[in-house]
Every structure is written in structure tokens, then in C-alpha cells.
Image 1 (tube, helix red, strand yellow):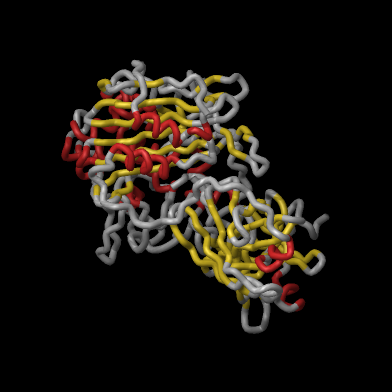
Image 2 (cartoon, helix red, strand yellow):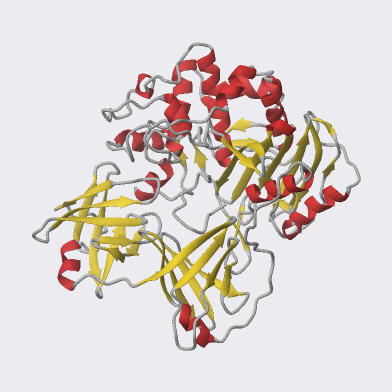
Length: 577
């Protein structure tokens, strides 16, 4: 799960002096060896990023406690042409969570806390929601606590502002409602791991970076690994992150987190090989602790979820897997382990259009070919050339398509190509690979429309992404009457965010003015609207007499965030100008 805000269907997630590593013991990733057919097949998977003018990745393949292959692709720094190598240090994003969870389990095994303790025992400033929130629920994302990145964006922060632990804490302590009752659901929440970092500090007397260095990294010999609680720290051999733009060019994406717990771990593939091997040896923590850390969470109804303590537990083609991915700025990371085969793949990337999770499984397909069950049939997004389509054919596809209630994919036409815009996202151009199939360049996704007769319109389509086939159905969105739109106007205040949103009409279009600008509201139901980042879905609360006195926001990881209509006129509001 990428720890950045994702509201969308389009998720997210060149050889340059490559460094090659042969089979070896985990401690050193610096030896070289010639490539065999498996290694050449791995190289081919990364070919599009293996150029000096492209960001890329570093991969390590681990077998029986040894790095059997490791290689860097593309550049760690495009400005200076520094190549990615196995020694390159990457920001790990949400892969960090398993280390925070490990710190909590260490303290639990020492009897310094219980996983079933109320988190407010250690973080008393957290609001008393009237329901017990346990440390275990924070570990498993079943606490109901709203996600911090979404909250920050809704409060007007940019995610390239410097964000500190204190900034996040203040916002979390202002929350008076949960997404759901603790234990009722699973919903990924980075806030839970920020709270866990607070617990580590309260119980141990050390910050998470200090505790992890002393109790995890130094004992395992992870000399290139650290939690970074100040974004401006100098990191030797660091990779910088770059996102691919609609025109195909890459752009530097800054990362200014000065907060730890859910993210902000820096490491190398060599250090992570040591971490991976500890799950077998238990040299640090012990095998009992490592087994407990991999126990799946359980909901109040007794149903097990596939998430453990910073780890996703699953199966792939008949084999057990333990995995976690991460994504912040344009960093993309993944650790995939097949515990019964003592086999793992580590991919650390600084190219935002690279999908480490998908590539990890493709590498497993190569090395574990003889052990895997037959692969299920899935749509492929292998490269296809762009084709020209008659603009008249494109007219049949223009319209709004519902993926799920409140989530709309709108298709428009710009000259001779289609443009797509999903709820909560900017518009992206698409290119045709057939008369009915269209792809995005920014992420591996394809929309295939039904064939229609001349002069007709497509009623259905299918979104192919991440191996899934997601049906889309054309809908007609009716615009509310003018008097209803007028009833929505006003200033709305959220005490949990400490901000005012201004809702007003401009040329018969309903607009919401947020601390970071204006967003058009697109009707999707009765008193319900969708819009771009960071809001997602917005619903007005109206009485029978037609008066609307509140609204609530649901952007996926923040639910039922209430704004009450107020007479206050915010500075910078449209009505005040």
C-alpha cells in the first residue's frame, strides 16, 4: 500500500553501469559474476529503466540466506548521472512499517507492554473515542483511526511541505471521530504506525530511530539503514525520486518527511537481505517473536484478515508469501518472501512508474517455476504500438462510467485522442492500441470499451489494472436544480481540521474553495458530489425544508469527516474577495 494518498482506480504503485552480484553470504553485496539465463531474464524485466537518462531500481534475489543476484538499473541521480547500484540507499516508504512493528513486539516480549493495551495508556493526548483502541489493532490497521496523510492534505498541507512528528500529532489529537468502531473493519491507516512510534518512545525512553538503531540495525549489521526524523539529513549514496509525466519525461519529486513510524526508513538491498534472513534465524528477537509478528489480524466478527504486523500474508500460485510494498513521492519498494522455499525478492526503485510488487512476482515466476501451480488467466498489458483511430469512433466512448458508487471515470475527447479523469485525480491522456482499447502512459492500465454500431454509444467498459478486470458502466449524472445548488452555498468549518471550506456557485457550477485552491463539484447522487484531490467524495446534510447545514467528506481513508455551516467568513474566501 502506498503510504501516500491514493483515492484512485489508477493506483498508484536501461542499463547504466550496472553492478552485478553473484551468490554470496548476506553480509556483502559487492562481488561480481557473469549472468546466466535467469539473470538475463531479470534484466529484461527492467530494460525500460536501464538507461542513464532514466531513474530505475536495484533488485536483489535471495536464496537460502545468500544474495544470488543483485543489480542496479538506471540512475540514482539524473542531474549528476549517478547510477543505481546495490550500494544505493533508498527511502523505503511503507516497507518501514514492519520495522516499527518489530520494535513494538520486542517491547512486548520484554513485558514492557501488552499488544492488548489501550493505546491511550501510552498516548493519553489521543481523544477518548469511548471505545478501546489496542496496540494490536494499530498493528493490523483495524483501529478505525483516520489516515494522517489524507487529514494533512484536507487541512491544507502540501505533501512536499516539511511534515514533522509534532505536526502529525497535533492533527491526530484533534480528531474526535473514527472511521469505524475499532476492530470492525480493516482499513490501511498510516496514523496507527505514527502512534506506535509514540508508544515506543514512551515505553523505552528512546525515539524510534534511536531504539531501532540500538536494538535492530546494529545487532543485524545493517550499517546503511536508519530511520530519518529530519528530512534535511545528508544520506550518502541516496537515490532521488522521479515521476514520469504525461509527456513521457521524468520530474524530480521532493520528499520532506520529518516523521517516522509508518515511513522514513532508508536502507539498501544488502541490509534488507540481513533483515530478511533474520525471519529464519531469529538472531534478533527470537523465532517465537518472528512467528507472532506474522500472525494475521482478526476482526470483531472473528474473521481473519491477510494483514499482520506491517506484513501482508498470502499465497501465490500455491506457495505461501509474506510481503509488503511502499510508495512515497516517486519511491517504489517491495520485499516479497516465500518462507517455505527460503526465497525472497527485494526491489527498491526511484522511478514512480515502476511497479515493484508486480515485478517481484515475475522474478519469482522465473526462479520458482518448477514449484508454482499454473498461473490463472489474466489480462496482459504487454507493450503494444499506438494506432490511429477515427475521431468519430472516439465520440462513442465519451461519457461518465461508474466503477463503484461515488467513484466515476469520466472520458472526454481532445482532438484525436481520449482523456480520462477518475474521481479525485487529474486528467490523463490515453493512447489507442485498437479501436476499442486505450491505455495510460503514467501507469499500466487499460480501458476496453464495448464495440458499438455506427452512431451509437458504448454502455460498458472494463478497466484492466494490476491483473484485475474491473467493470465500468455508463451512467447519466443529473445536475441538481438551481435552488438546490443555491442551498449548498456557504462556509463550512471542521473543528477536527481547524479549517473552513467555502462552497459557492460560479457560472452554474458548484465550487468548493479549500486552503489550496478551488475544486469543481461533480454530482454523483442525491446531495452527493465527487471532486479532485484531496476531497474525493462530498455529501451535503440537508433537512426536509431544503436547508443544508453541514457536509461530510469521504476520501477513502478518512470517512464521515464533518464540516458544519458557519457564519464565519474565511480569509481568502470567494465571498470575501
